[in-house]
Amino acid sequence: MKISIASGKGGTGKTTVTASLASIWSTPLVAVDLDVEEPNLHLFLNPEITGHETALMEVPVADESLCNQCRKCTEICQFKAISVLGDVILTFTEMCHGCGGCIAVCPEGALSAGSRELGEISWGTVGSVDFLMGRLRVGEAMSPPLMRQVKQRLAQMIDGRDCDVIIDAPPGVSCPAVAAVMDADAIVLVTEPTPFGVFDLALAHQAFAPLGKPMAVVVNRAGIGSPDVYKVCKDRDLPIIAEIPYDRRIAEAYADGRIVADATPETRGIFDEMVQRIRSMVPDADCRSEVSHG
Ligand code: SF4
Ligand code: SF4
Image 1: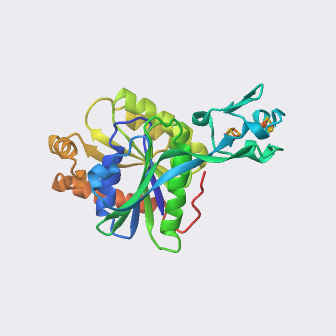
Image 2: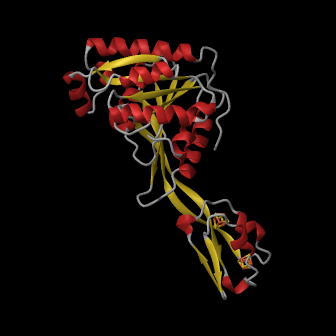
Image 3: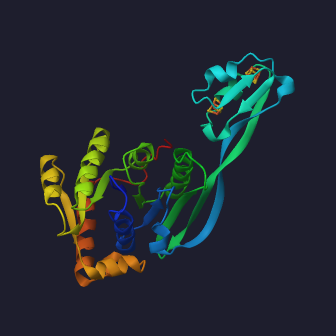
């Protein structure tokens, strides 16, 4: 079973929910931080990092002495990442998506494969839980290529194993968020009962609903703000699988970087129930199903 923990906006408690679920999950699990722009799941889980690698993306390197200025490379590039001015070839590697198209069409072999650093992929363990995360290089604009490589590493980690996967997805509804939920068997949306939380919950549901996956909601900081969150869930047939109360002890646990499920006896019960509700969303799922690299 693969579960993505997502949210329409940042700051709703998505990562604290993910960390708590990982800490109490009773069967083999890989916890993945796919929020590669701002990974912070490790701050709560404190994994022992046992390996890491630099993630690279293929970008073109030009040899102008071989170029005949045919411009086939500029015609195929959808991202304006390569340009030919007179006998000068300009490559804008920060705009390159690494498709390799320009290298493939160059008739003179004037373009070869170089690399651009995307970031770092790290893995390790937290007790019996396997841990995996990506961290985008500071200044790198594109997170999906790094996310693809994290997902490739995940596919290797779970290959042939009977385990579950829980993914901390990036907030929002843009391309990285969709990429983080598209492989999941179910999506858990974490929200808060504020006007912003309610608005972005509706956006997230609208963005992810076409994927046709079971979705449910966790209301964090329940008891404050707007009751509209319950109306949105009711109108959209979104089951609420847990409400985490607005409680000073929970806020203190969060501020200390502790696992929220351990904050009070009541929260542990809430998360135990949440695990059961999540399992019931996809009773027949198996983690060995395909992980796409998209
Ligand atoms: S590899 Fe693809 S995206 Fe990058 S410059 Fe070449 S055609 Fe453009
Ligand atoms: S496709 Fe190759 S030969 Fe043609 S302009 Fe580009 S680099 Fe030069």
